Image (cartoon, rainbow, N blue to C red; front, side, top):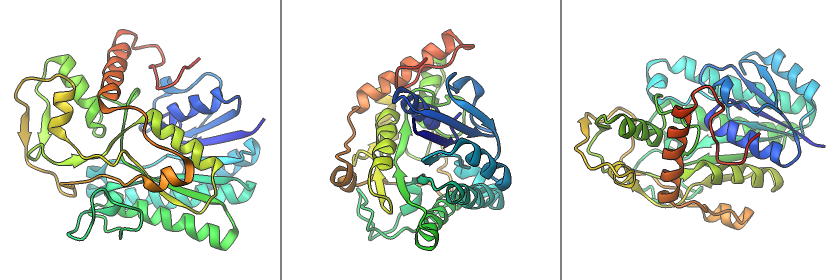
Length: 319
């Protein structure tokens, strides 16, 4: 039986990925420092290691004991605002932490699938096509985007220098079950919480800014496809469709007047990812419509409120 190690496996995407790995009959080890991840999201059948990926020696020790064939690297500092306030911390987690993961993979001969960013990586400039293909230049407008691009560079370096097989997935705006409705990231879940509470959702900017919202179940399928595919690739994972923030509210059935606030530094006006390469390499395409994804996310937020002490429902059948 093969083994997978997931960094950030107590998080929103990582815990859904852990469910899929376990459903495949494999052993699953999870590394998470619980700074953003939540213990309640952890599947009972996974082996959990409470650990910061910046602790290099401890991470190598976990990998050496677990002997994974693949490390799915999702642990990250993903808050654009925090990165702006504390860029050194952002780089420490996203650059040094990624180097530590690659060193752990090198120590045990594991391949790496790295969760990078699409929109924050490409940035926004006049020549950038939208949807953006992987051939586009990356010109981040945030420290977070820059640190993720550095992580991509180290994945390539470890492949060239040490033969560590690594694949980079540039993700769109991922949403779905287990996304935190009270966090700073994850506008879909935040809007779900506001609608349930009868509060006015807050929109930064004019609400016409676009993003590529991709359902977490589809993203998990992409991670598994990348694991099985040839390494050394950088691949967009998104729908290729621009959706405005106002579209999200409409999709959730909100009929009131949202609260508008000033746009935040580092935010893009338009973003969507060309997914033709994912289709060509993996046969991957998004299968969940925005309407269905919003419904499933809304239902999951309701379920989590009704049973706050139970493991929140995910995108896959769980134990």
